[in-house]
Structure formats: structure tokens, C-alpha cells
Image 1 (cartoon, rainbow, N blue to C red):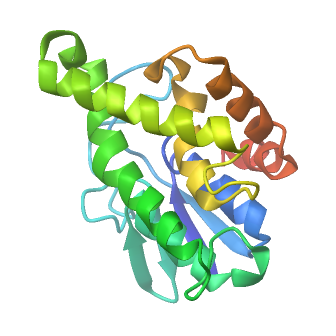
Image 2 (cartoon, rainbow, N blue to C red; image 1 turned 120 degrees about the vertical axis):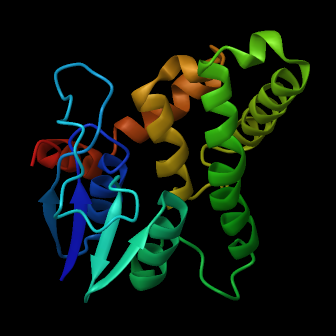
Length: 199
């Protein structure tokens, strides 16, 4: 049995969604995490039950093995449940683009968006250029097809769309992003996942 280490309304919510899309059997272990404030603020202390190396979420436990980092968890799950078709397998022409988008999420989008929220894209030319390049790549991709990999929804869409679900203002106000978000939000698996988000 898979166990998702989860904190409500956090980055681990996207994996409730992915697990529901996959139709995978899983359990949820709700843990406390450090938060900066608001109604879900944690204690700030590390939850001793959380196996994540930094006490964060998401983490996935599969037969005693801990997988952390969103891109790695997405790849692990889509490889483990190939029949769901949410991640191209080795030999599929879309495998390379899929891996590229997962790596782009972790290596480009996350740091660029953090810098954007810190105001660096307004004050630093290099950070501004990276933000504009990210926007251009995503926008161009979605102008050509409804999903990141073309006509087929994948776990890569879950990673990227979850940013917009949390903070739509993270990306410029293009209608193409709003349409992408609306398509994703209409998926029944997301509705089921949100129903389980509170634990």
C-alpha cells in the first residue's frame, strides 16, 4: 500500500489528485508542517512521523521506501501505474518531453516563481528575463494544444496547474492559462482529491 505523507492545502494536495487520476490504492498520513501563518499554521516543530528529509511534504512511502520531491514522485507513480496513461513510458516518443517538463518544473519554474514572489523579477534583469522565458514557453506550448504534452493530459499538467490553483497571479493574465486551469479543475479526480484534502 502506498502512503502519501500529506498536509492539507499544500504541495502534497497535487498528489492526492494524481493518485485519484491513477486509480491507485493509497493511504494518507496527515502530518504537521511549518507554515508562515494563516488558519493552517503549524507548530513550527518537525513532525516526528514525517519521513521527508526536511520534514516537508509531499513524501510518498512505498513498501518502506521514501520518495520525495514532486517531480520524482510524479515520475515514480506514473511509471508504477502505466495503464493509467498519465506518463509516457520508456520507448514512447513523448517520454523525453515528459521528463523534460518534470525537470523544468523543478529546475526552472519553482525557482523562477519564488523569485517572482520575492519581487526580483521587477528589480533584476536576469530574473525578469527568466520569468518572461518561462511565460513564453508555457504560453506557446498551450497555444498549440490543450495540455503540456499535446492532446493528452499527464502528470506534468498536474504539477504546473497546481501552481495556478494555489496562486493564479504567479503567471501573467493570459486567457490561455485560465482555460488550462478550467480544463484541469473540471476533472472528476480533482474533485475527489479535494474532498480528501483535509484528511
